[in-house]
Image (tube, rainbow, N blue to C red; front, side, top):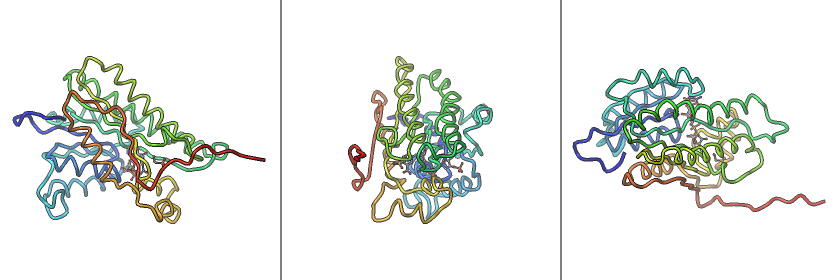
Amino acid sequence: MTHAAQTDPPPVVFITGASAGFGAAIARRFAGLGARLILAARRYERLEALAAELSGGGAGSPAGGRARAAAIHLVRLDVRDRGAVDRAVAELPPELSDVSVLVNNAGGAIGLSPAHEADPDDWEQMVDTNVKGLLHCTRAILPGMVARDRGHIINIGSVAAETPYPGSNVYGACKAFVAQLSLNLRADLLGSRVRVTDIEPGLAETEFSLVRFKGDRDRAAAVYEGVKPLSAEDVAEAVVWCATLPEHVNVNRLELMPVMQAFAGFAVKRD
Ligand code: NDP
Ligand code: 8X3
């Protein structure tokens, strides 16, 4: 999705995890550019509500009612299910099958326990979603991009990929995988015009902490107490910026944090 000629059809943007948080905000921003959207998540009713907002052009729509998506296709999808991902891509309406931008956003953290106390089921869910789910979507959509010699894969990583912190264990490792995979894809794609970007946000207020703490609202709210975190819209802005740069420009990795978040240095246990 770049400086396309006026006659080009609007880009097709496939967003996983579009039912909440970053994914929904990214959908709103691309809708504001008149893109055609494929919105995927497990909570289909959330997608339906978003689609109604983005196609209506009413008061609640982007840009105060002016902008609307050129087309919207909804997919009830669990990215952990490789067969379902393959089917969803194979069954895209023909006019939406040439995906211009894939935003691999579906994911999250489950739990914050130290490794020796963490629930292995939580680990498995994080690996299945953040790592394998992202791989399923990428493998299903990338061949078409290569064949068309055009496209952009935007992975939502995390500062947790770069900076260890207590309790991040498998979540951070999953996002480190995303960071390295993004670079490795760039190596494989040299010679094509397909772009790959890893966006690494820091503390951002979405349903992320509610999911991490398994519905514990007080614990989730405490994460953002007294802080101005990133918003989902801040992250969406970064995604759209990367996607709309001239097509010879590839942002490899973009890390963003709220000003009120920084680094604490090494922890040292003293006797
Ligand atoms: P939210 O919990 O608000 O949104 C997560 C989205 O992922 C939801 O739409 C959810 O949809 C979807 N999702 C989760 N599991 C699956 C699945 N198996 N199949 C399909 N969709 C799934 O969190 P955020 O918006 O904050 O998170 C989005 C991404 O950003 C994640 O990858 C997260 O790790 C990352 N991130 C978040 C940060 C933060 O502080 N908020 C910071 C850095 C990165 P549904 O449940 O309907 O399937
Ligand atoms: C989410 C940001 O710092 O909670 O990826 O890991 S953090």
